[in-house]
Length: 185
Image (cartoon, rainbow, N blue to C red):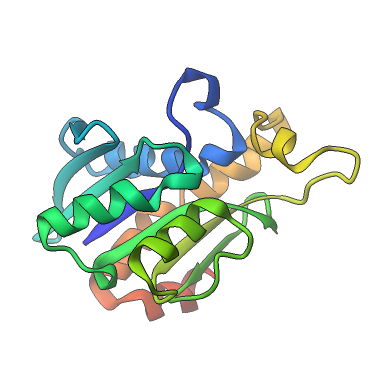
């Protein structure tokens, strides 16, 4: 099983809304005491650990958001992992900050990182956990909004969602994605 966090590499983007996936992956990494992240083919960082006797990979594509599918597909092909064993965690502008939406499949919803993954795997049947970063104010361009940091008030709401992530992971591993959907959506 792989949990894939979407984001952009580098200090410049570290705490931006668009890096919600990376932030969630770091939270999982620390909560479950995973191994240090290592590099794979220079455009994928990965960590490996065990939860409930399951080997779990945490993956961070380092190719920038819009090309996330390319290194993810390469890593999965190399390790014999299919799309059925992938859960992508990423920011969602259409979901309110602090809210989480879990889905078994669907379109990219306008998210370029998810679009790249769907294109690379040639299927929309990819499980995902969308972390709310919206709504965007009308007077701010989308790119400026997603690449900006959370305000203090927003960070409190985001942290509340973040604290649910380990329970969501456990729910998925114990009972499957349907259980997580019914409990956390």
